[in-house]
Length: 465
Image (cartoon, rainbow, N blue to C red; front, side):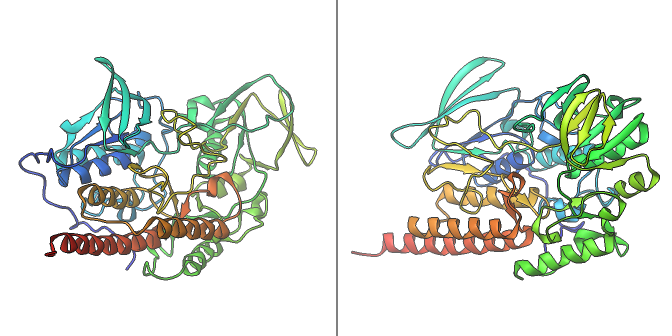
């Protein structure tokens, strides 16, 4: 059935510390956000020696408001877009007193509790930045870090990149023509409505952050506009009296079923194009879902003015492609993020237009020992998928999982990449899309196959000659 973590799904707290096995490969985990901590937990439970470096002083990454690591895009009204039972790690249900869609501070607390519950907090190294990751001729990895005790380089057999993809702000390229006298910020730098009060605000974008910030501007700005070049289907978070994502079907069903579910949700939610936003030119299942409970009221009230795409900037005004204009002393560019890895040499790994094909969104076949966790954009939450990826990596490192041959890996990677790109309209925000339930089901199936291959390899190695 579809993924759903219930109240009773909480493993016992870890008792005695787990001692790593020095005979196993040594692993470096980069980042202690929602993806890094679940990868670290999997390695810890598998007795794999590892180091986990986090540039901030706490776990939680993007969900920590004003995170001192400087990379968090969290703002004061941020809440999850996936309901708690569909976002929680499989063995650690969210608290029963949480609302259906938890607020950012509740999510951050949940991550802290997760680390404490499973007892691996002392294995995380905070306030430490990964400067460089280099691959040696022997296939091992040199990781250079800078922390409170200075800079040092350590050797690892594998590296797990869990830095996320919501930190390197993408601004319009090329920039819009004209000059602007006011302030311009990216949504990554937005924290609360105090930045909007009493101002003429234009929010540019059609994603979840754009919706949230536009709703906040409608409540407190002198004037508020939202500019969109293309329309999106904006779903409600509740349908038929329950969280909309809990209306789910078995994971093995084909994508068209998920697409039909999204279309059903869009139909019940109502088309925001009737309120002045652009008419979507794609079907609901052909883009990453956008959710907002407040955007419709903001548009109906007249407090938020819908605008088309921008033509140019003109001093204290923004001019749109339909010839209209709006006063502005603040533009908020909710224009997404770049996928980048500043600690990896571009000659080793480069990403163009956010496109980095990976096998199961985890493995780069040309770089053995380099893994990515959480570098995907599911129709659902990242956390359970990152958990499955982390468990898979731990199995691989221990030798409990064996991959198919290289030809099959590359063939699967190509098929999966092409399949998902056909499902969604071409955009930098759709280069990492996966179907949440089907991804979990398919990865689980591959892990079982790999376990059988590993067992067969062991049996073959001990067979008398």
